[in-house]
Image (cartoon, rainbow, N blue to C red; front, side, top):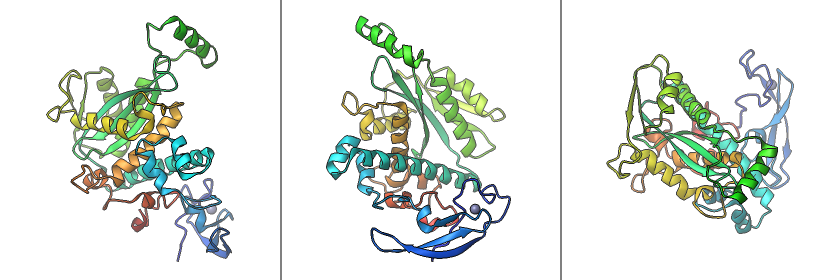
Length: 339
Ligand SMILES: [Zn+2]
Protein backbone atom coordinates (compact mmCIF):
# COMPACT_ATOMS: atom_id res chain seq x y z
CA UNK A 1 0.00 0.00 0.00
CA UNK A 2 1.31 3.44 -0.92
CA UNK A 3 2.57 5.54 1.98
CA UNK A 4 3.51 9.17 1.31
CA UNK A 5 7.18 9.65 2.30
CA UNK A 6 6.90 13.41 2.96
CA UNK A 7 4.54 16.36 2.53
CA UNK A 8 4.73 17.62 -1.09
CA UNK A 9 3.92 21.18 0.00
CA UNK A 10 7.25 23.06 -0.33
CA UNK A 11 6.38 25.55 2.42
CA UNK A 12 5.08 22.95 4.91
CA UNK A 13 6.82 23.17 8.34
CA UNK A 14 7.65 19.43 8.04
CA UNK A 15 9.82 20.19 5.00
CA UNK A 16 12.48 21.95 7.05
CA UNK A 17 12.29 19.32 9.80
CA UNK A 18 10.63 21.60 12.35
CA UNK A 19 7.72 19.18 12.86
CA UNK A 20 7.28 15.45 12.13
CA UNK A 21 5.21 14.58 9.06
CA UNK A 22 1.76 13.23 10.04
CA UNK A 23 -0.88 12.45 7.42
CA UNK A 24 -4.37 10.93 7.24
CA UNK A 25 -6.01 8.99 4.45
CA UNK A 26 -8.86 10.91 2.83
CA UNK A 27 -10.71 8.64 0.39
CA UNK A 28 -9.75 8.15 -3.23
CA UNK A 29 -10.65 9.14 -6.77
CA UNK A 30 -10.87 7.22 -10.03
CA UNK A 31 -8.27 8.18 -12.59
CA UNK A 32 -10.12 9.17 -15.76
CA UNK A 33 -7.72 7.66 -18.30
CA UNK A 34 -7.63 4.09 -16.93
CA UNK A 35 -10.15 4.00 -14.05
CA UNK A 36 -7.48 3.18 -11.44
CA UNK A 37 -8.21 3.98 -7.77
CA UNK A 38 -5.85 6.71 -6.60
CA UNK A 39 -5.68 7.19 -2.78
CA UNK A 40 -5.96 10.71 -1.38
CA UNK A 41 -4.18 12.02 1.73
CA UNK A 42 -4.15 15.09 3.94
CA UNK A 43 -1.12 16.52 5.74
CA UNK A 44 -2.10 17.06 9.38
CA UNK A 45 0.45 19.84 9.80
CA UNK A 46 -0.32 22.19 6.88
CA UNK A 47 -3.77 20.67 6.08
CA UNK A 48 -2.87 20.45 2.38
CA UNK A 49 -4.43 17.60 0.39
CA UNK A 50 -2.53 15.40 -2.10
CA UNK A 51 -2.67 11.94 -3.65
CA UNK A 52 -0.20 9.20 -4.56
CA UNK A 53 -0.23 10.66 -8.09
CA UNK A 54 1.34 13.90 -6.72
CA UNK A 55 4.60 11.97 -6.18
CA UNK A 56 4.76 10.45 -9.65
CA UNK A 57 6.78 11.62 -12.63
CA UNK A 58 3.61 11.75 -14.75
CA UNK A 59 1.88 14.06 -12.23
CA UNK A 60 -0.77 16.31 -13.81
CA UNK A 61 -0.61 14.70 -17.24
CA UNK A 62 -3.97 14.25 -18.88
CA UNK A 63 -2.61 11.09 -20.46
CA UNK A 64 -0.14 9.74 -17.89
CA UNK A 65 2.23 8.20 -20.41
CA UNK A 66 5.75 9.54 -20.13
CA UNK A 67 6.98 8.46 -23.54
CA UNK A 68 9.93 6.45 -22.23
CA UNK A 69 10.96 5.99 -25.86
CA UNK A 70 11.36 9.78 -26.06
CA UNK A 71 14.16 9.53 -23.51
CA UNK A 72 15.97 7.08 -25.81
CA UNK A 73 15.50 9.45 -28.76
CA UNK A 74 16.87 12.45 -26.85
CA UNK A 75 20.18 10.67 -26.24
CA UNK A 76 20.38 9.31 -29.80
CA UNK A 77 20.72 12.45 -31.92
CA UNK A 78 16.97 12.75 -32.57
CA UNK A 79 15.81 16.37 -32.43
CA UNK A 80 12.67 17.34 -30.50
CA UNK A 81 10.92 18.36 -33.72
CA UNK A 82 11.69 14.98 -35.30
CA UNK A 83 10.51 13.18 -32.12
CA UNK A 84 7.16 15.01 -32.39
CA UNK A 85 6.83 13.70 -35.96
CA UNK A 86 7.82 10.15 -34.93
CA UNK A 87 5.37 9.99 -32.00
CA UNK A 88 2.71 11.88 -33.98
CA UNK A 89 2.13 14.40 -31.20
CA UNK A 90 2.25 18.16 -31.02
CA UNK A 91 5.69 19.80 -30.72
CA UNK A 92 4.54 21.50 -27.50
CA UNK A 93 3.80 18.09 -25.95
CA UNK A 94 7.37 17.00 -26.59
CA UNK A 95 8.65 20.32 -25.24
CA UNK A 96 6.68 19.89 -22.00
CA UNK A 97 7.88 16.29 -21.63
CA UNK A 98 11.44 17.46 -22.33
CA UNK A 99 11.30 20.07 -19.56
CA UNK A 100 9.76 17.58 -17.10
CA UNK A 101 12.34 14.89 -17.97
CA UNK A 102 15.15 17.34 -17.47
CA UNK A 103 13.89 18.57 -14.07
CA UNK A 104 13.25 15.01 -12.85
CA UNK A 105 16.65 13.86 -14.10
CA UNK A 106 18.43 16.80 -12.46
CA UNK A 107 16.67 16.22 -9.09
CA UNK A 108 17.29 12.49 -9.31
CA UNK A 109 21.02 12.95 -9.99
CA UNK A 110 21.51 15.45 -7.14
CA UNK A 111 19.53 13.26 -4.71
CA UNK A 112 21.70 10.25 -5.60
CA UNK A 113 24.87 12.25 -4.99
CA UNK A 114 23.41 13.61 -1.74
CA UNK A 115 22.56 10.09 -0.55
CA UNK A 116 26.15 9.07 -1.35
CA UNK A 117 27.41 12.12 0.55
CA UNK A 118 25.47 10.94 3.62
CA UNK A 119 27.31 7.60 3.25
CA UNK A 120 30.68 9.39 3.11
CA UNK A 121 30.77 10.89 -0.42
CA UNK A 122 32.68 9.69 -3.49
CA UNK A 123 36.44 9.87 -4.02
CA UNK A 124 38.56 9.61 -7.11
CA UNK A 125 40.53 11.59 -9.64
CA UNK A 126 38.41 14.30 -11.23
CA UNK A 127 38.70 15.90 -14.65
CA UNK A 128 37.13 19.05 -16.07
CA UNK A 129 37.10 20.34 -19.60
CA UNK A 130 35.05 22.79 -21.61
CA UNK A 131 33.09 21.96 -24.72
CA UNK A 132 32.36 24.79 -27.09
CA UNK A 133 29.04 25.19 -28.84
CA UNK A 134 26.69 28.09 -29.60
CA UNK A 135 23.13 29.38 -29.43
CA UNK A 136 21.69 30.44 -32.82
CA UNK A 137 24.92 31.75 -34.33
CA UNK A 138 28.34 30.10 -34.08
CA UNK A 139 30.40 33.29 -34.34
CA UNK A 140 28.17 35.83 -32.58
CA UNK A 141 26.78 33.77 -29.70
CA UNK A 142 29.23 31.02 -28.66
CA UNK A 143 28.53 29.04 -25.47
CA UNK A 144 30.86 27.08 -23.21
CA UNK A 145 29.87 23.90 -21.41
CA UNK A 146 32.04 22.95 -18.40
CA UNK A 147 31.85 19.17 -17.83
CA UNK A 148 33.21 17.47 -14.67
CA UNK A 149 33.78 13.72 -14.46
CA UNK A 150 35.40 11.13 -12.21
CA UNK A 151 38.22 9.59 -14.21
CA UNK A 152 38.09 5.82 -13.62
CA UNK A 153 34.29 5.37 -13.56
CA UNK A 154 33.46 8.00 -16.26
CA UNK A 155 30.78 9.30 -13.84
CA UNK A 156 29.59 12.77 -14.94
CA UNK A 157 29.32 14.93 -11.81
CA UNK A 158 27.71 17.89 -13.57
CA UNK A 159 27.54 20.31 -16.45
CA UNK A 160 27.40 24.12 -16.39
CA UNK A 161 26.67 26.25 -19.43
CA UNK A 162 27.88 29.84 -19.81
CA UNK A 163 27.86 32.48 -22.53
CA UNK A 164 31.08 33.37 -24.33
CA UNK A 165 31.98 36.70 -25.88
CA UNK A 166 31.43 37.03 -29.63
CA UNK A 167 34.35 36.06 -31.84
CA UNK A 168 36.65 38.63 -33.43
CA UNK A 169 37.25 39.30 -37.16
CA UNK A 170 33.55 39.26 -38.02
CA UNK A 171 32.59 40.13 -41.59
CA UNK A 172 30.49 43.35 -42.08
CA UNK A 173 27.19 41.41 -42.25
CA UNK A 174 27.91 39.65 -38.92
CA UNK A 175 29.14 42.93 -37.36
CA UNK A 176 25.80 44.55 -38.19
CA UNK A 177 23.88 41.57 -36.80
CA UNK A 178 26.03 41.62 -33.63
CA UNK A 179 25.27 45.33 -33.09
CA UNK A 180 21.54 44.61 -33.51
CA UNK A 181 21.64 41.78 -30.95
CA UNK A 182 23.68 43.84 -28.49
CA UNK A 183 21.19 46.71 -28.71
CA UNK A 184 18.52 44.61 -26.96
CA UNK A 185 20.55 41.89 -25.18
CA UNK A 186 23.46 44.02 -23.96
CA UNK A 187 27.17 43.34 -24.54
CA UNK A 188 27.91 39.62 -24.45
CA UNK A 189 30.53 38.90 -21.77
CA UNK A 190 32.23 35.59 -21.05
CA UNK A 191 30.70 33.47 -18.27
CA UNK A 192 33.34 30.75 -18.59
CA UNK A 193 34.92 31.45 -15.18
CA UNK A 194 31.49 31.46 -13.47
CA UNK A 195 30.65 28.09 -15.09
CA UNK A 196 33.96 26.60 -13.90
CA UNK A 197 33.39 28.00 -10.40
CA UNK A 198 29.92 26.42 -10.22
CA UNK A 199 31.33 23.08 -11.40
CA UNK A 200 34.03 23.06 -8.71
CA UNK A 201 31.55 24.09 -6.00
CA UNK A 202 29.27 21.20 -6.97
CA UNK A 203 32.24 18.86 -6.77
CA UNK A 204 33.18 20.25 -3.34
CA UNK A 205 29.57 19.82 -2.13
CA UNK A 206 29.12 16.19 -3.10
CA UNK A 207 32.61 14.63 -3.01
CA UNK A 208 34.06 13.10 0.18
CA UNK A 209 35.54 15.52 2.70
CA UNK A 210 39.13 15.18 3.96
CA UNK A 211 42.18 13.84 2.16
CA UNK A 212 43.83 15.06 -1.03
CA UNK A 213 42.01 16.27 -4.13
CA UNK A 214 43.26 14.64 -7.33
CA UNK A 215 42.52 16.66 -10.43
CA UNK A 216 43.58 16.54 -14.09
CA UNK A 217 42.96 19.17 -16.75
CA UNK A 218 44.51 21.08 -19.61
CA UNK A 219 46.68 24.17 -19.09
CA UNK A 220 43.92 26.78 -18.70
CA UNK A 221 45.02 29.20 -15.97
CA UNK A 222 41.53 29.58 -14.47
CA UNK A 223 41.46 25.99 -13.18
CA UNK A 224 44.09 26.18 -10.37
CA UNK A 225 42.64 29.49 -9.06
CA UNK A 226 39.05 28.24 -8.93
CA UNK A 227 40.13 24.85 -7.59
CA UNK A 228 41.87 26.56 -4.65
CA UNK A 229 38.76 28.69 -4.05
CA UNK A 230 36.48 25.61 -3.94
CA UNK A 231 38.84 23.52 -1.77
CA UNK A 232 40.58 26.12 0.45
CA UNK A 233 41.81 23.73 3.15
CA UNK A 234 42.65 20.64 1.08
CA UNK A 235 45.92 19.53 -0.48
CA UNK A 236 45.41 19.68 -4.26
CA UNK A 237 47.32 17.35 -6.62
CA UNK A 238 46.76 18.96 -10.03
CA UNK A 239 48.18 17.20 -13.11
CA UNK A 240 48.27 19.32 -16.24
CA UNK A 241 48.38 17.98 -19.83
CA UNK A 242 48.82 20.11 -22.93
CA UNK A 243 45.72 20.25 -25.09
CA UNK A 244 48.05 19.84 -28.08
CA UNK A 245 49.13 16.37 -26.88
CA UNK A 246 47.92 13.46 -29.03
CA UNK A 247 44.34 12.59 -28.02
CA UNK A 248 44.54 8.82 -27.81
CA UNK A 249 44.04 6.22 -25.09
CA UNK A 250 47.46 6.94 -23.53
CA UNK A 251 46.57 10.63 -22.99
CA UNK A 252 45.75 11.22 -19.25
CA UNK A 253 42.74 13.27 -20.37
CA UNK A 254 41.30 10.44 -22.47
CA UNK A 255 38.23 9.92 -20.18
CA UNK A 256 37.07 13.56 -20.39
CA UNK A 257 37.87 13.81 -24.12
CA UNK A 258 35.90 10.61 -24.67
CA UNK A 259 32.96 11.90 -22.58
CA UNK A 260 32.81 15.14 -24.59
CA UNK A 261 32.94 13.10 -27.81
CA UNK A 262 30.05 10.95 -26.52
CA UNK A 263 28.03 14.07 -25.75
CA UNK A 264 28.64 15.40 -29.28
CA UNK A 265 27.60 12.04 -30.67
CA UNK A 266 24.47 11.50 -28.57
CA UNK A 267 22.85 14.92 -28.18
CA UNK A 268 21.25 16.33 -31.33
CA UNK A 269 21.99 19.91 -30.23
CA UNK A 270 25.75 19.24 -30.09
CA UNK A 271 26.20 17.40 -33.38
CA UNK A 272 28.37 19.69 -35.50
CA UNK A 273 26.93 21.51 -38.49
CA UNK A 274 23.34 20.27 -38.36
CA UNK A 275 19.91 21.83 -37.99
CA UNK A 276 19.52 20.79 -34.36
CA UNK A 277 21.86 23.52 -32.99
CA UNK A 278 20.66 24.90 -29.64
CA UNK A 279 18.46 27.98 -29.80
CA UNK A 280 19.01 28.94 -26.17
CA UNK A 281 21.58 28.18 -23.45
CA UNK A 282 18.83 26.99 -21.06
CA UNK A 283 17.57 24.35 -23.52
CA UNK A 284 21.12 23.10 -23.97
CA UNK A 285 21.58 22.72 -20.19
CA UNK A 286 18.23 20.89 -19.93
CA UNK A 287 19.24 18.43 -22.63
CA UNK A 288 22.53 17.81 -20.79
CA UNK A 289 20.76 16.63 -17.60
CA UNK A 290 18.78 14.07 -19.59
CA UNK A 291 21.99 12.82 -21.18
CA UNK A 292 23.82 12.74 -17.82
CA UNK A 293 21.14 10.53 -16.22
CA UNK A 294 21.30 8.14 -19.16
CA UNK A 295 25.13 8.07 -19.11
CA UNK A 296 25.51 7.66 -15.35
CA UNK A 297 22.67 5.34 -14.39
CA UNK A 298 21.40 3.54 -17.51
CA UNK A 299 24.26 2.94 -19.98
CA UNK A 300 27.21 0.68 -19.11
CA UNK A 301 30.69 2.25 -18.96
CA UNK A 302 31.61 0.45 -22.20
CA UNK A 303 29.67 -1.76 -24.61
CA UNK A 304 31.27 -4.85 -23.06
CA UNK A 305 30.58 -4.10 -19.40
CA UNK A 306 27.06 -3.69 -18.10
CA UNK A 307 28.36 -1.85 -15.00
CA UNK A 308 27.19 1.75 -15.06
CA UNK A 309 29.40 4.69 -13.95
CA UNK A 310 27.14 5.21 -10.88
CA UNK A 311 27.63 1.55 -9.87
CA UNK A 312 31.39 1.78 -10.34
CA UNK A 313 31.53 4.82 -8.03
CA UNK A 314 29.30 3.16 -5.39
CA UNK A 315 26.41 5.59 -5.91
CA UNK A 316 23.85 3.06 -7.15
CA UNK A 317 23.57 -0.67 -6.41
CA UNK A 318 22.37 -1.69 -9.88
CA UNK A 319 21.93 -0.44 -13.43
CA UNK A 320 18.60 1.36 -13.82
CA UNK A 321 16.04 1.54 -16.59
CA UNK A 322 14.76 4.90 -17.78
CA UNK A 323 11.36 4.23 -16.24
CA UNK A 324 13.01 3.64 -12.83
CA UNK A 325 14.53 7.11 -12.99
CA UNK A 326 11.40 8.92 -14.16
CA UNK A 327 8.85 7.02 -12.07
CA UNK A 328 8.89 9.42 -9.11
CA UNK A 329 8.68 13.16 -9.21
CA UNK A 330 10.99 13.49 -6.23
CA UNK A 331 13.43 10.67 -5.71
CA UNK A 332 12.47 8.77 -2.60
CA UNK A 333 15.73 8.05 -0.87
CA UNK A 334 14.01 6.24 2.01
CA UNK A 335 12.63 3.65 -0.45
CA UNK A 336 15.74 2.42 -2.27
CA UNK A 337 13.86 -0.33 -4.14
CA UNK A 338 12.19 2.40 -6.21
CA UNK A 339 15.41 4.13 -7.27
ZN1 LIG B 1 2.29 19.55 5.00
